[in-house]
Length: 319
Length: 237
Image (cartoon, rainbow over all chains, first blue to last red; front, side, top):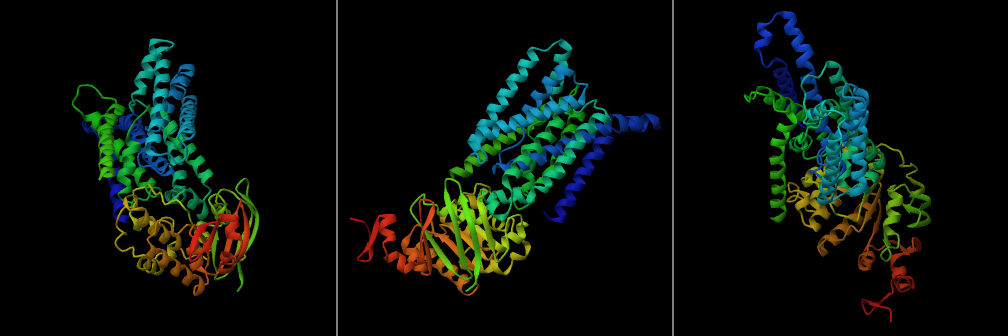
């Protein structure tokens, strides 16, 4: 990635973060200083931090999963990771309530790990696109059905409403503590994923070549899966499932990195963070009378993009 | 000649019986054998693919645990599969994981020799298998290592490219002091390589000698079931 691109991305990200903090401007300018500070620190900072780190985590893990499966269509939501995490979180939340962030996070991470392990088992490490997507679809469907079952068996209407609200994906009303609970594991996981860059790059040349170059591929696979499950799981536990950022961000990122799949992890994280900040801003400022859940917006925009991608690939293949 | 590669007790359970092997500096060695005889397994074991047993030393150095940059100066491996599904330009694929110092002069020479100029800016997943082979061969040779382990490098190549590749490999062995071990199916290519030849069967090296002698000897009819009669290969009657 050229310096120009890195600087431009960093500026875009910083601008989106600032815009998220300062929009809308009127309560900050009109209220007293201490109230304005409270709004900034207690309400808007956690939200902006969550959008930034969750988006970055989705971008980075999307790039890493795509490199691992040598498949540009893999992503945490299409491989069932996000739905597995959501299922794990809902089940734990029923048992212990959504206000216990540690157990819900752990449940969510275990759900994500389970989904990715099942995917590796079903599709194998070098899955064809069709196999990968089918296996991911099956896992998503299974996790989705089990989540619906869990909703149907909700211990009380309040538990049902809490879980349903959370499932749609939202960054609203999270405390700084909750934000830290998602952001710290996510940032750690992104940093550790970045260390796998050369090994993930070399996987493009095939597993045999990657091993001959000197990378321990079994270890790289295990690390990638555990790190994406941990990071995505921690974010899902706090904000619910948010789709398509993990698919879209790496695709844009690779345009900046000569298409190298491992090298795309860092820019994909920056782009993912900027995209989710922008989506959150759009949700907040849209004149709809009430707030649309951010997960709904990313899905509304992401699904057509995915369809376009599939059509584009088919068209390319048929040429 | 001095020994470059010393492999002791190499084995992959179920695929390669315990094998010890010495390869000299500057020699080009052909590895032949029927399908499933263990050619690829021997290359894997030497390249450290799939946790083989035994020990390999290249120029006295054990490649195990070395940094990828250093390791690529010792050995390279070209797998038989030419399947690259990632949408990358040929130029970027060749640069993947390549040590910085390897990139310039040798790449130019390889690009000229393998006539890659027109392919460099095209996506590898859209090249023909033969074109992609040339790109992957360039990637395998680009770090200029001491030991080259090549699995069927001539497969999918036109006859002209096969001859040019063998000439190139002979040249870097003879004048560059590199050691090349290549698995080939085509016994005529093995004949053209001259030099040393290993014949494998049932997961072990059955014969090791000069190719002219081995090709004329009893090993070929015994192992392959073919013989050289009147300038052509025929099934043993």
